[in-house]
Length: 66
Image 1: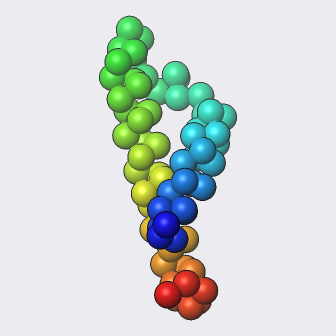
Image 2: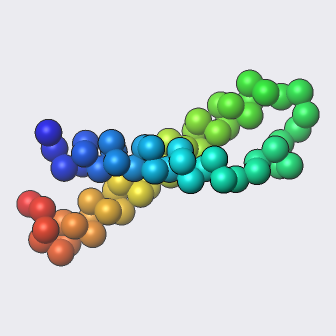
């Protein structure tokens, strides 16, 4: 397995767990449940991608990984 894949596996539950603490209901329109779920999913994927690449670059620049 690649290091990046392992980072994705670690970041995914961490981001989803941390996003549970947000109350995004106040930001969304009522009766738009499907749109809210899609937005939540896209937001989670973006954060997972950004965090994974950030940590991968930090580890690579510190030469912890090759």
